[in-house]
Image (cartoon, rainbow, N blue to C red; front, side):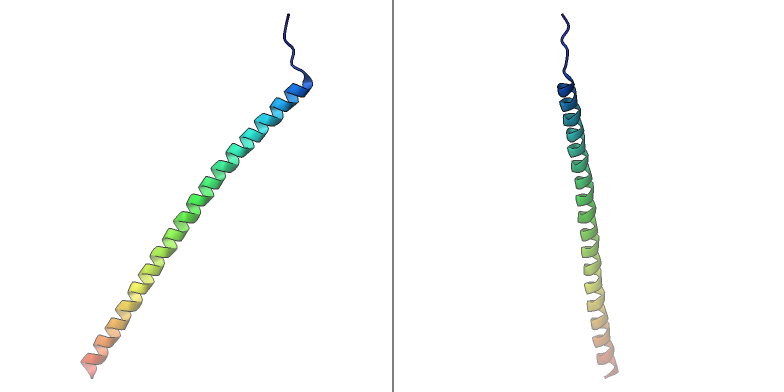
Length: 70
């Protein structure tokens, strides 16, 4: 005797497999996007640090220049 799978069970299995694949893919894409956002935020933070350092150096240079001229 052969076991037969009903059309309803075949459909259920197909829907389940599709849902699992979709959830897995969404998880992978979410991880990629989260990593990209983290990297962008890190890069912008590094830029802000550089800008603060440049600003401080420019202020110091201007103060040194004024003291030397005065």
